[in-house]
Image (tube, rainbow, N blue to C red; front, side, top):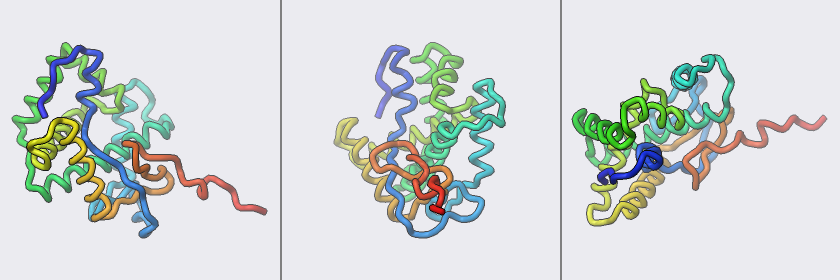
Length: 204
């Protein structure tokens, strides 16, 4: 899927448009101790989550020790879905070159009017400057997957194909998030609220 020519106000919709989907978690076992999430055989540690969140906070000129549950959920959701995209890409034999990443990022810069503008837009989406290349890589992989899965479809059809494939991948490999951070919601690209049974005190 190529990037269309749009004005700056619409750039965020394009560069934040990774085609990913979340799935409902099932009670198939506890998340490994010290893990914020587990995707198949991949463990996303709490340390990785914390450091990624702190990079965003520092870029937003906030204390790295700031408590922000919404930011934490957004970042964890991105880490999980990026891993799902990676798994699906490996399964389908889809790879991305550094040249493709650089070309795509340059396209974002041209559309936004400069590198600083791209950083500003992505920071509003909780992506720190140090995380932009990884973010763009996931976007490019998702776009390439759409082309591989539905080569004759339009952009919407390719998006639908990738969403369906990622849901299937997530269910097949098993995807779990530590309940302290919330639960997956099937129709949103975010982590839902913490399970109610963890927030309600037992009756006396």
